[in-house]
Length: 301
Image 1 (cartoon, rainbow, N blue to C red):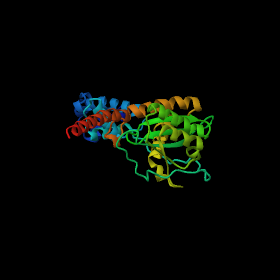
Image 2 (image 1 turned 135 degrees about the vertical axis):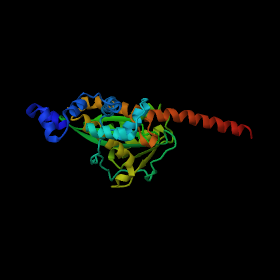
Image 3 (image 1 turned 30 degrees about the vertical axis):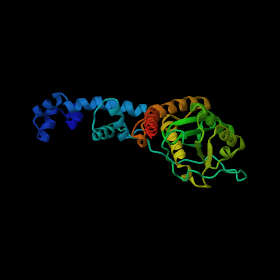
Image 4 (image 1 turned 180 degrees about the vertical axis):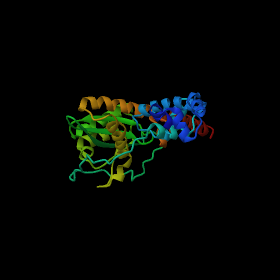
């Protein structure tokens, strides 16, 4: 049918059908046939899939789009999502290589590695990871610092700057402390050996807040792998998807929007395909209920 449609203006329908040994009535019946129920539903689903894909910074693959559609109340098979994404040329983002931006200060006294690649926490404010990455803009390099809660994968602090001074990392830490209402006594703060994180001012601020500093080993990216994974998501989902950016100001606005989406809407497989903020909201009632049950149990003895 596609061949006939493409050439009927040049040769006519009947001559083409005669050569193909197809009755012209068969062609006209197919041309005038109304789309089937599956085809009509595909059009609706394709629009929904495209909306989810675009709203997720074009980063979601078929699995997460399938999960998001179910969260929105649209029952659909995963294979259908995969088929329509192939048909419309939609694909999830693929991460590229990253580059280190923190330089170790060999003269600084460094804390021990308290994490040893065990990036696991059973509750928020047990373990944070921090790192810095760079973004190339039209007006020069901009550097971004992030602090992430390992339990919920929530970005609790971030900051952008045109320089790699300690203030960059320190401002991200201050935002993290503010967002957690300074109730972070005992949280382990893990970073690489960058001079920003081993600086005296940074160490003193951690100590004053009651947090415990932890630093990875030399030249080993795996010792801060979860933070570097976050940097990769930032580069893939925002910088490569929405860039290039003119400079610090428009990148700050875009980063603020991305962090809000990341914390409140982005599905995380490690959390059971729910956003970080929702995970924390669900965690605290369960945690409080468990504590109350334990209190009642102890009161009976």
